[in-house]
Length: 254
Image 1: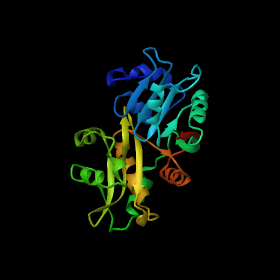
Image 2: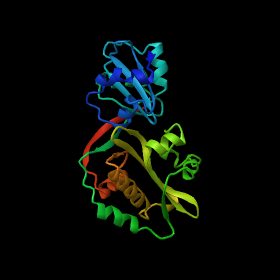
Image 3: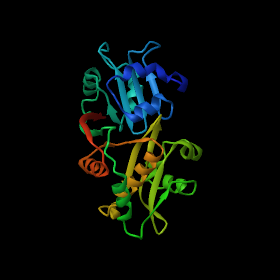
Image 4: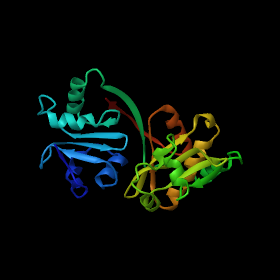
């Protein structure tokens, strides 16, 4: 397996057919992750980007997992594995027969139905004890130090990169971060939204308000805030914000 440098990542774009994922796009643009190919004229590729692993191309010709590929696949442990190739699914289910699992995620259309007035109303509905503020040079280190909220910033290499390319907001109460909505990563013309609320403060409209503020900022910059849901609660929140479901799809884990 050969690991690609940032200036070589376009090599794998032709293998991405059928997978429309903003984290994958961010990887190919050199914003996040690591990428391996089988040879200089690749037939397959493994991409690790944040919490995700993308298995591209076909491994039909492989009779077993060789040592170089095994080393790379170990990097996929604990990641959300995305592939549309049955050959990968077959290979992983055989090689990791005791730990290979399947579950579902939900993607949303780019043609969303965002209503600016409703988004603004969502923000006004939260209690005055909570304050929505942008992630700036003062909030950024607070986010990184909070294990629950770190995904809002941790896939940007520096504060400077986040300030130039990232977008994010948090909700504070007594100078503590209660909720956050931010760019998990970014690519040309879009971001991948990540969002969270501390368990003690859920069901108070905070995630809805913080996400609404993030979407309004994205709309003002002509950036698409992509939403990909892991569960029914995230689906319900997305639909409240104006997203339209595209499809339910299968992902995997080791």
